Image (cartoon, rainbow over all chains, first blue to last red; front, side):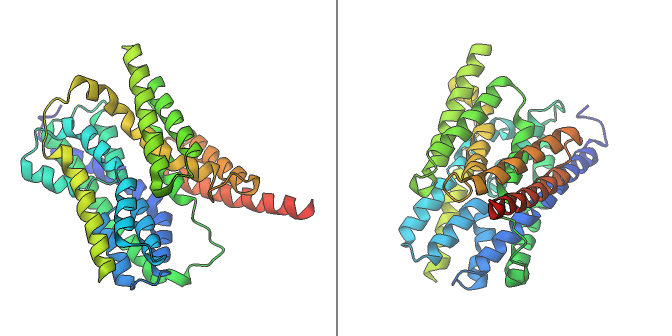
Length: 234
Length: 111
């Protein structure tokens, strides 16, 4: 399947088809984040530069809000890096699927490794398609090149529209709903359900911890429970 | 300027974490690690999303929690029933949230 001649076009098409609805799903979150960025005392351009610099909404939101509140630079960097520590896990989970790529593509691909890119890529790479390394590379970068400009444009539009978005248009639940919908395709086994249930429950219980440490606690516990149950099922 | 440098430092740190395993690629991670990797996505995404549904403003309050949980349920059901259509599930969830929030406010106002 992976060697026939129209495979590249097919993989690129599949990536565009998979990524486009995710862009739609991210629209409310991106606009709301942009409006929040614009509402801080930071200059709009500096606030928006968090999009190309960080390419990840959760850490952007935390960093810019902490900066706006006058927190020290060290504290802001630490907090945002704790929130983004999940990228280490994404990197580890994706590495076996990208090991055969040329090094420069892996260096470049690392920049694009945001939540939705990870979620789409890992769902595809562990699914029934059995792509080879070249198809996986095409899929990954096509998804990245759809998501990246879209995120720059959405957050930019949010900054520009800022106050023009009606206050009654509440979008704050758009972000968690988007994460929920990225999660659902990953629930393919009992241990995966257990990992999600444990991670979610512990993150709720520990949500009072500073710097997003609750997220890390939940994630660690969920991964451990999933691994334990997955091992028993083997 | 300090603010831009702070954001740049976060960007560098984030890039380092994203690159950590990708660029040192070993074809096979150690077996003990490999067994855990499939659960990274479910555990992390649930840990991000769940607190926002259960305690949207940091605490559990019926007026906030109930509409958010209704939204999550509607989005989940819509995704399952409607051929995994992401935008419909998302906007269905948001619409359910608006309606449920309005209903809770209305009920509280009359009681």
